[in-house]
Amino acid sequence: MDSAAATTIDERMSFREHLQELRMRLVRSALTVAGAFALTYAFRLRLWTWAQWPFLQAMGRQMKQDPARLQPWAFTDLTEPFFSLMRLSVWVAAFLAAPVIFLQVWGFIKPALGPRERRLCIPFLLATSGMFLLGLAFAYTQAFRFLGDILFQEAAGAGLRANLHIDSYLDLFLSTMVITGLMFELPVLTFFLARFRLVTARLMLRFWRHATLAIIVASAFFTPGDVVLTTVFFSLVLLGLYFVSVLVAWAAEPRRART
Image (tube, rainbow, N blue to C red):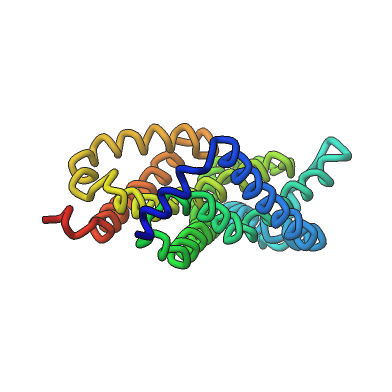
């Protein structure tokens, strides 16, 4: 009865009403990010200290210096530090607002779900927010350590002096954080695809070679930098998440589908 009623309500929504619903969800997400930005911009200098620390540690290891005493940053445009710190504050605000953004995503897709799937609201929010934050933590503590050691190794061997632009560094920092955070959402996406019987664990295992090739191509296209080892590193991470997703798909499959 509830499923039929939900379907009827969803079918009554016109295309325009769906667009209005989407606009409302986007506005709420934007307002949440704006509210968080008012907080993060006040701490922009501390955020910059936090953002540069992984690379300073990598530089210190390669240059055999104390990372706290390194000052490799430079700028050629007077507006570059201002807009760079503003951009960093906006992205950190978006990271903090991630649970609310995922809640709006859930609210938008909820009318298309059945009664059983609608009960997954809290697990959905916890899983999406948790995996995204776990991806950010992995990028900050592991990915940047790997990237930094590779990128500074050649510079240290050649005896070159660092003279880095803030804007270019933030491009690398933010893209790595965002891409890794989204990569860690793969098990959550697989869970819902399996619940709707769009994928199965058996199907994912059957096409794991094709998935591996797609992962390598995607890693080469989306990962920052032009170093081959970075593509290999992120490919291995994403491949590991793929096989974790296989287990998630097996657990999420309806029991009748397994038999």
